[in-house]
Image 1 (spheres, helix red, strand yellow):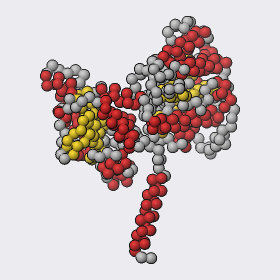
Image 2 (cartoon, rainbow, N blue to C red):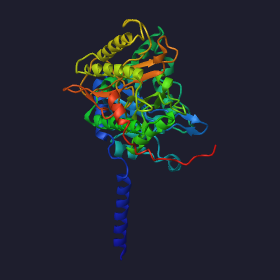
Image 3 (tube, rainbow, N blue to C red):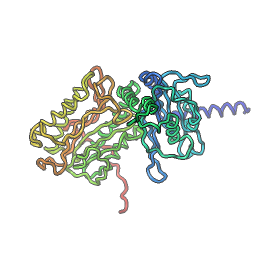
Image 4 (cartoon, rainbow, N blue to C red):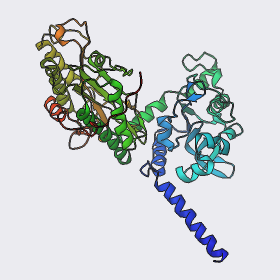
Length: 488
């Protein structure tokens, strides 16, 4: 066999190998065209002669030399698709002349480093950011120091105000350096945005710096989902609903809260969801009355207890938020069922108000009225107008790249995805008959607003008390999943 044929075969094998490696990775991420379109949408909302500045999220320390798993700032990911730390994005309202080039955006990214990548994984670097994410103008973070940009020429510099919680990794061009250099370039430390002095120079500079408008613009963009976003968000919701369905079949007294959590999160991983969208909440008995209970360390769920499960899968950045409350033994007591059915009624009536043009406060008002009247009828409160803390939270919030996605919370619009989550929580020791004590119930679903009315994206998870009891009679694939006993 001659050398030319050997080289040809070797090259073909290399191409097949690369294809095989790439095809083994998820292929359903948002496209670079999506992110570019979002930057253009941002640009359309920016004031004239302005620049918008975005930083990647900080790397957070967990303990000693161990970091938390890095999670990108949602706005940064929304606009770029870049999932690595130590990065900076500048978006210009108008085209800028830089040397012989005309640009309207520039991104600074982590530099390629073979040794570092051996420890912590591949980096896109300049070429990868250009090829994979579609940016034309890309620099290493270390080049921001010498990058010639005159921020004084802009009428507005839009950015999110800073928290002093970014560590200096001592690597040139890290997030610490990028923020420090940006502040120096705009003379940020000379201005108190919350209390500008009467000094004319400082007053003019303070007008230039705007740490509020950008949040409003991004909320407007992100509260209405695009077609591409809905594909991923629906998948996250359906995965979460399957998790609820499977634990209903697997649940039995004597489980621990942690085991319940683990079954949900196993389902998420089985479907390829990278993370949980927020710390999983699994509260049995009185723990269900703690709204954001995340310890999940009760070792034995009691036979007559309810289990409140508020969990959501994060799939390719998009997060669901689904809550179900089930009886550990598969059967609601009389008191539990009365409270559960009251919460369900409040949710059902609230969902009907998820109509285009309706004020977003209306579902909460509907649910609150129904719950107050129901609690009064059951004798838990004196009258429907009695003050109480048995329903202490709102019923609706946007979901998306954040479990509490930003929004303006004015009126429902087409392609918003908003939760509906009424609840009743009666802790032990409450000022009512003790037969109600320890009942904590929340039902939460993710609702898509459409021209034809609301669609419950999480409806796969049973919701009525009767449906839950029937599903809990079904066999579970986990029934025979037994692990060896460990020594005490």
